[in-house]
Image (cartoon, rainbow, N blue to C red; front, side, top):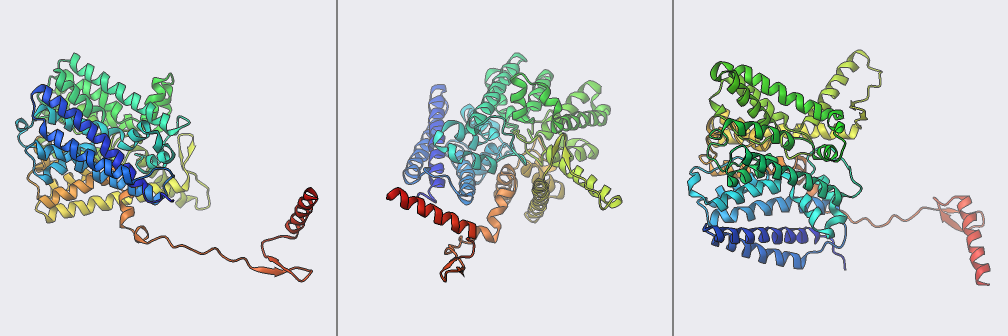
Length: 521
């Protein structure tokens, strides 16, 4: 019996069971600390029942087709925000649309929030909110590969479908070990970040919650005004770990296993550092007249690292800064972090490729017959990668324009509409004007919230994966072609043979038949 078409069902069931287990643990945690726990328990029960049913009717015995892998990824990223929204609806103060927005913002590590009254939610809900970003930061698919061996056959398909860059670095022989190595680095840095926050003066609960949302490049701080009310020393701690969050985890693994020179040899990492430092210094110069040099350096570098890595923390209300700083911040949102990181945005490596392609075309104007390959460091960039990057940037721009126009039609002003579209598509979180860092998305039209929920998921899945659904080929059923009958040619003896069969092949076949006859005799 064929199991084709049942892989997505099995993956959805497994996902639901894992989330049900986490929700059940949160119910126990909430009950032990005196927080409301029935919402978590009800969500765990409902998700567990659905997961058991889906797992019962699903199968992962065979490797899925490309279409099945895409369906699985898209359905998982539809299911997960819906499940994550249940505690907000059952135990929190949010409506279903707001809860879905908040949950999607968490799992996609966007950090855009609809919370108005931070005192209306329990500490357990805030910790759940932070954990959704930590899970989303490394990618739910990677967790599946590391945790469930039965998915190892299709692991590489799913991982490359959700991959945050043009190409994943296969730095270990098997993808499951790769995922495990990344999780070790990710988890180790999260623990180190929480410890550093605590040493710098942050209470334990805040240290854990902020560490979960720092390494995930998420930005869901339990503090209503993000890092503005924390001591200045904590801002510099955050800067260090946001640098890690936006870097390629494969390179961080190499550096942690005795090859630190791999970081500096990587052209994307070097460009990533240049963007962070130049952006921070430029902001500091623009802010020096308002804050003084010491505070200007802190705010400048904090916001440069926070926005470029798509973390979305704020050390001040940058929506009140000058238009020049706003231009810089919007440019950083567009650039993004490194491929293979938790960061959002277009990614530095794509911009490097686009710049090199543009440079090649300029040189082609002077030397039209010259062969000018595109190189990234010592690597030759294939034409198919260039085409993929060009397609990604084009689709990214199209979705950004459509989102901006949609928000304008739903009543947002120009600055709010463009910055909200860019901040959600790039998984940054806060924008400018009405959706600034000390504001929220709660006042937007319900239709705008649903559209931005889609935009956040599209940005997390690298846009192209989502656009596939809107193509005609996606909805066309694969045609079942009958095997083509071979054309026949006449043999010298009057019989006929297939046209593809050569004379030498005929003689070899005759010799094989003779040997088989001799063996039988």
